[in-house]
Length: 309
Ligand code: RIB
Ligand code: CA
Image 1 (tube, rainbow, N blue to C red):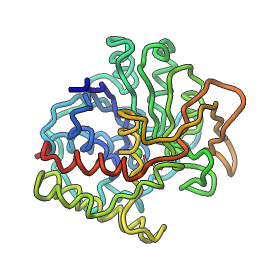
Image 2: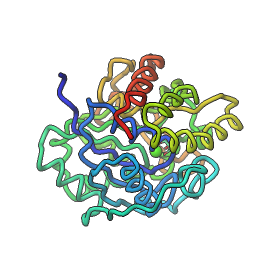
Image 3: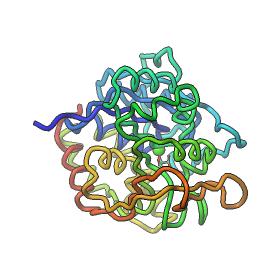
Image 4: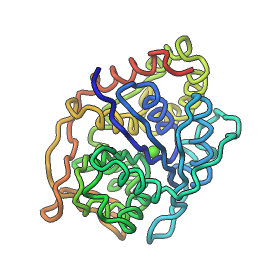
């Protein structure tokens, strides 16, 4: 039995975030030690409520720490209601959570987890990078103590998805992204170069209706809204598997073709949030290619495993 990977997911759920969280709960290779929430697809308070409610749906008693509600510097952009719905899960509604979040803010939860278990914890941010930037500001030494940071975000040799230049997570807080990319920690970027090649369809989720009826019914309903957005804007029958791809890359980089290079991020102007290979800064493992069927196969298998209720 391979050892499981201790992971903290930093998340702005969000429909593909929900796919990633349920995947992480289903895959025995993941030791999900905590979730931290962030504004992005929805306001932070909604992200926190959604994360707690999703864990209760899945019967998972895992700590959740509430994170930043605003970017570090820039004026907040509007939340993309048209992508994930006003409440973040499309037309799927969850009962309000019974549990409350951890007493600590997200950045302190991250610092405590990483310093308690040096060299062991992988951080997987799948929303704006504000919490990680705040953690670095408060405790720069965590850069030497994390096992790895695996980011869903950015576009290296690929167009953006907010505009021609920027990917949503980076666009929402480019100053935080700049701080994260400048830190000397082991880092992988799982950007649109690869996540837009991994297309999840309704057929990929359908087996869950049998094997995990409670989570399957929720995810199938939530995904309808996300599929609709992709059909209208991209003409595809399904959705880009953005956030689950980052979880899978944190477990096994083999399906991803990577180069190592520093990464710049544009902070201001029309190209704010654009990420490009640079000549200065710490090297980052940048995913530029992917064996999409291998990633999708793992996603399908774990979601259909019956390990979720
Ligand atoms: O650009 C895609 C990313 O932005 C995903 O993490 C999605 O959930 C949104 O946060
Ligand atoms: Ca996300």
